Length: 231
Image 1: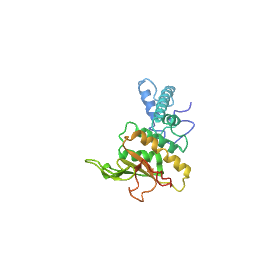
Image 2: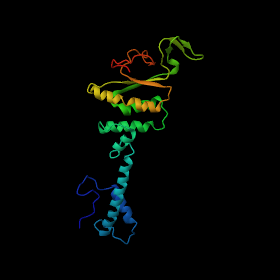
Image 3: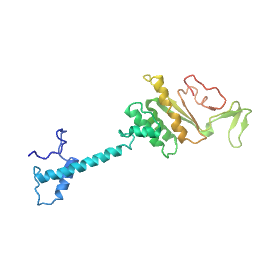
């Protein structure tokens, strides 16, 4: 009769001591009392191992099931979570998990700059550079005819525009990334930020900061800038 082994026969992976299966087997066998043989080659010991293997399998199965609610580990449920969140199934496993992780991070979260940075990092990967934020007291704006808000900003005479509460997502296009993949990646920004930021906060993704904050405005009656730098 073959002796008891704690490796998943016929495969072997080195050590056979101190494994979870061994601990379970010894615990179950000890509960039988001293009247039973303690010989690892005995039928009663193999019986204890049989129960231990069943428990070990169920424990592992439950752990794998739990992984399906972890964005970093999910496999079988990944496509289901993508469907729930309305996400694409395209991309590597890491990219797909990153998009799901960004959605999980947004649940009931206060949209602080730190959270937004974490979301963008998960969502965009190497495309994300940084979050540019213009605080209300540092922003400026304009309205036709100009205006002075008591206790607030002085608006110049120009088209409707404002930097108040503006958030810019600075991105880059890696040399190895095609235009199609780049625009598909940054297209994920608007849906997730639009659903979590307050209505008074404006945001956009930008590819350069050569002008500092000068051109970062929400503009109501300005032709869209389609020079592949600012939107």
